[in-house]
Image (cartoon, rainbow, N blue to C red; front, top):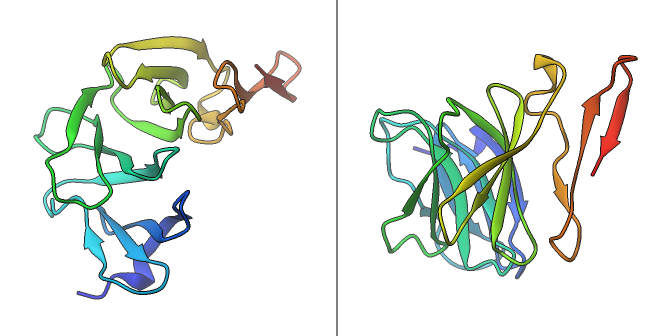
Length: 167
C-alpha cells in the first residue's frame, strides 16, 4: 500500500542519503535519490511513532507498543536488517519528542506525565530530570541538546503562565 500521503515526522539522515518517516504506525526509510524504501518496523499490529536518526545516521530510534506491554524505546540499524534493541521507558505510558544527544549516548523525551526523561542508550537506565507545569506541554517542549551533549534545553510554563527556556 502506498502510504506516502500519510507520512509524518519526516527528516533527512545526518548523511543526507536517506529520509525517515512515520506512516500509519510504521517507520520507513526512503532514499533521497536512488534505492529502495525500507519498512524498519514491519509491525502492522503496533503503533510505532516518533522516529529519529542517531547522530551518525547509522541507527534509528522510535517508540513502539509492540508486545502489548506499553511503550518502549526501540533502536535498530538504519538498514532494517537486524532486530531492534528494546529499551524500557520505565513507568511512562506514552512518549513524545525524542532527542538524541550529539555524542550518541543519551535520548531525551517527554512522557505522559509531562516529565522530561533521559535514557542512557548503552546502559538502558532512565532518569527524570524535570516535570513540566501543564499537561498541554506534553509533546511541545522543544527538547534540544547542546553541541557537546552536556546540556538539554526545553521550554516550560512558569508560575506566571509564560513559557520559559530551561537548561
